[in-house]
Image (cartoon, rainbow, N blue to C red; front, side, top):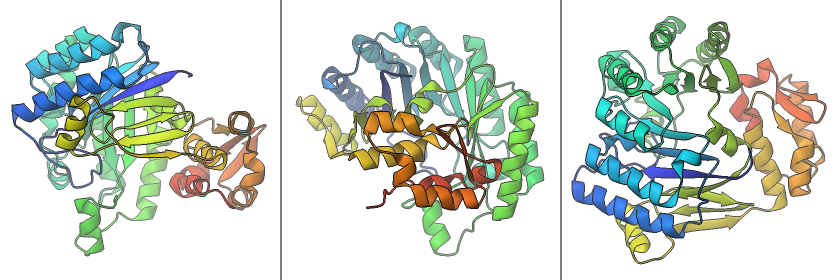
Length: 379
C-alpha cells in the first residue's frame, strides 16, 4: 500500500493502565479537551497530510473518552483537512467504559468504518490487575453498541501472558471474545515496557513474568484455534476475519510514510522521522502559535532504513522482500545481515522463499528476539 497514512493521537484516558507506555494522561476537565481540539486543528493545517490518506487511525489514549459534543467536534476538525469519505480505511479506537451507541453513531456518520475495542480480558480479577476501568458486561455492551450503530468491521484487542496465567484461563477468555463474532482480533503477549508501573513492579520483585513455556503454548494454541475459526494470522499478533487486515498497521510494517498529529505522535517521510512534544500544554502552545510541535527528529541512514524494514517486515506472515528493500534503500540486506540470517536459519527460526525472508513456525515464538537482530545494522 503506497501513499501516506494519518495517525491522530487523542491522549486522554480514564485511568493509566499499569502496562501502558503510550503517551496518555488522566485529564478530565473539558477545558483541556477543548485546548487539545483547537491545537489539533492548527497542527493539521500545517501537517502536510494529503486530502485522502490511504488510511486514518484515531488512537490514543482513548478517543471514545471525549464527550459526544467534543467527539463531534473532533470529526468536524478532521473533515476540514481530510476527506474521510475517500479514505479506504478509517479506524477509531474505543474503550468499553466510555463507548456508547451515541458515540458509535457519531463516528460512523463522520466516516469511521472500522472500530477497535480495548477489551484485554473478560475476567474481573484480570481487568482489575490490568487497571482496566471496564467490566466484561461493558465490553459486551460496547460491541453491541457498535453493531447497533451499523459497524460491520470491529476488532477486539485481547492480552495473554498475564502473570500466573494458564492455557485454560486464556482459552475461556478467547472463547468469550469469539462468541461476540468480531471481524478482526489482536492477541498481544503482555510486555513489561520500561517506564510503566508493571516494569517498576517487576524490577522490585512485586510482579513476575508468566512462564515462558506456558506463553509459547498459549501462542501456538491461539494461532491454531483462530485458524480453525476462520481467522488468518497475517502478522504475529493480528488475525483477520471478515473485516480483513488492518491496512494502517500494515502500512507501518511496510515502512510507509505517515503523518502523526497530536501530543507525542510520530511521523515518517522517506527515511526522516520526527516526534511531537508529549506534554499537552507545550504541544498545544506551539500549535496555536503556528509552529511545528516536534520535539525530536532524525534522518535514517540507508543501512538503518534497511534494518528497520527487515525488523518490521519480519512480523508479517509473508515476511519481507529483500529485493524490494534493496530497491528502496540501495542496501543488500542479505549481505549486511548475513551473520544474523545464518545464525537464525541454523536455529530454525528463519527461512528464505525466493527473495523473501520469513519466520518459521518455530521462529514465530521468538519473533521479537529474531527481528531485533536486524534493528542495529553492523558497521
